[in-house]
Image (cartoon, rainbow, N blue to C red):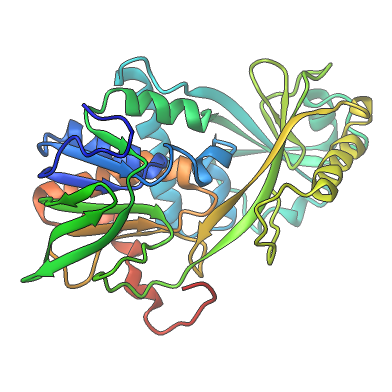
Length: 364
């Protein structure tokens, strides 16, 4: 069935997914696995052409103990487990790589007032042994059994088993009747779906769809070096993550206020200088390539996973910010279960859009 060319392989799918990033593709896969009937995914550009294609792909739920509420940490842990299930059961796997995460801090109190039980505290000698060549020995924290995926590789493997994908097809509007979306207008014609999931990063702006969920995008830069002459024990934050071929993945900046799509040489130079300062033996190691992306964000930095108010057959997953790759499979599974049963799964009750009802935020 259709894979591109701006054509619709199905006009009356049981489930229509709008958005071809990791959230959309994972949701299409989950709906297919749940036996929800025919599933059609449409994407205005190419699969993974938004934030997914620019993500680092780290799957590190335990570090969110320091910064996020318990429901978010629980969701992230469940999603890492779901990534493991997909690795074992999806045709060809999803490219999951297990790794340890080490976070460095010059001040032992710099992480949190409490130490989560899954985290081992390291003194400077421990860190120096694990990460030889650090310019400044310091304390740190070790989290074992975390993971990463190459986001585009994982997306491609999930998409390969989906029968109905149409790229180059944008949704332009919806028609609502009796509390349901009865049709979705697209650049390739009309679709009449049984259920619709909008997985578009930011909440969609479509004719006929009333959504008032505040959001914005935050630009970030990353780079990958040439293969490094040293080995890191997985991820060493905030220094780098070593990839399987020896290259280093570095960056993840917050370029607030920069809405330009270009890679900024000054930011790339600053990322490299930070790497050289931390590991002087790497000075002069060049970047093999560099890129930037725009991460969709809601005011609290947490996602919306919700049925669209007033519509019985439409759902929204948006604003995953820096955790879209991590949370994709559990979000997808929850939405598929919600579509199938009509009841919201307990794990998503904290992530409704109405938590922003009384707030005002930049974006739209």
